[in-house]
Length: 321
Ligand code: TXD
Image 1 (cartoon, rainbow, N blue to C red):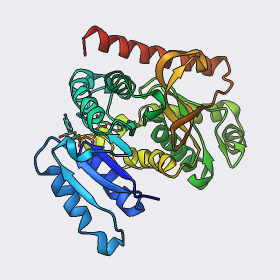
Image 2 (image 1 turned 135 degrees about the horizontal axis):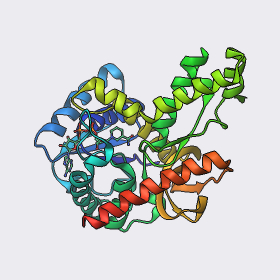
Image 3 (image 1 turned 180 degrees about the horizontal axis):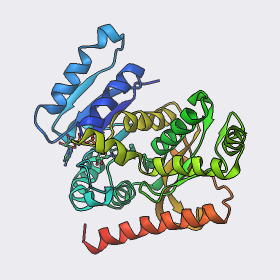
């Protein structure tokens, strides 16, 4: 098996952690691209110099030239501005759309057969734009949001119930914004429904619902909570880890079922938009979209989230981005 080549477009906070995680897991050789001179060279050199102590052996290269990403198997894109306190993800639309357009052109030219994971915000719009500009097939273009949103939701559930987070399974679907849809009914601890555990803990169904609603609300606002604390940017460790979970599923053909921002072609009643849904990831990228039954409340929340995505995409088109 030949060594995989992974291009990271954007050498900022998330790009740096991605590089380090890929090296530690020896997932492949890395090319870290940024438009800022010397920044990706400095980060890759710093991480590479830890190879002896960490015991990894991969090639890490920083660059300001697209030609260096030539023939990459996988591309992960974080290029774009992050939020500052008080900003919504959608406030980044105009600036990041211009950046995404140039990135899509670079990737199309030099890594035309790659599978692409987009992280830049506003996520659902940036994935749509990348697909449009690159013309890549939809199985090779996806976004990372749901793995992180679900990990956040799972963490809150574990902390609340006093159980290991390793046993919590909870998924968040929909767009990567305040309308995202944490699936309460499907959330479980090794198969035991979370709501049942909350009801037993509080011996009061109303109180259990109140606690769950607070966790759902915190999940929706979790990105903003970190932005408010960091003040100078947004979360970067957990988004990087989440993208690596997806990258690993693809590079190792794991067929993992993960919430991924995938292109819907009629699934979930959505035609022609990128939305977060359960997706099987393997060597071909998006290999299956898994439809599941939503009750009336969940469907209403999902529809609301899809509306937010379609509005964002319409804004992007109206602005000519
Ligand atoms: O879960 C998720 N999807 C997210 C997304 C969770 C958290 C943050 N998320 C978004 O990721 C965030 O709102 C941003 O849009 C991206 C990247 O976040 P990061 O924290 O890494 O931002 P940085 O540190 O500002 O890094 C961005 C880098 C920076 O080094 C710029 O010089 C570079 O992008 N940049 C470019 N690279 C390549 N090409 C172009 N044109 C370019 N313009 C800027």
